[in-house]
Image 1 (cartoon, rainbow, N blue to C red):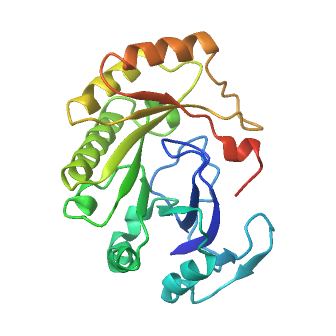
Image 2 (cartoon, rainbow, N blue to C red; image 1 turned 180 degrees about the vertical axis):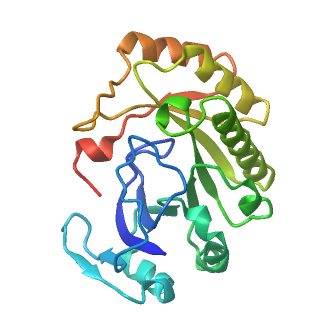
Length: 247
């Protein structure tokens, strides 16, 4: 269920640069071509008790002592507890058990999801913040570019809507490539603006060794932000944790 727990700097999105404790879950139903997480349920859960030490200890019963582990990792600069993955909403019932307890102890909770399970957050009033990663057709090499992607996109929008209605401070994030359609990103901005006052974070793909995927040129980034700015708040947020070689 849980792959690892560690304290580090948020490297992307609206809260980039903030200190988080990350609870990373195993597996994801999607197979994005740029994903850097192993899509497997194998392995013993691990904890990095000292940030930046690269000393990882196996904790077989981690899912039963999660709150105690978080208490041990807590630092004065902590912003929130991030449920990430993988896809954390695969384990929404587990999070439903622990997130309210964490909030009772004074922690803020943060969900990082691909948004494919809108029903899992329909009545979830225990997320203070959420980031929904909107996928694009070019993020996959194994989906029907018309039917399957459109179905996923509708679920992502519904997830954002459900979280927004529950009072969660939710924002959307989208990874763009050199060949990403400007018009599609503009449509996404318009669609999320119809839900509410929601920030859209534009994230250029981080080059990956062995993959022929190129990030967008500066001119394209500026143009996309101008188009999105007609509808909603928009940010440019590259992945700084990879640049800094952080977990």
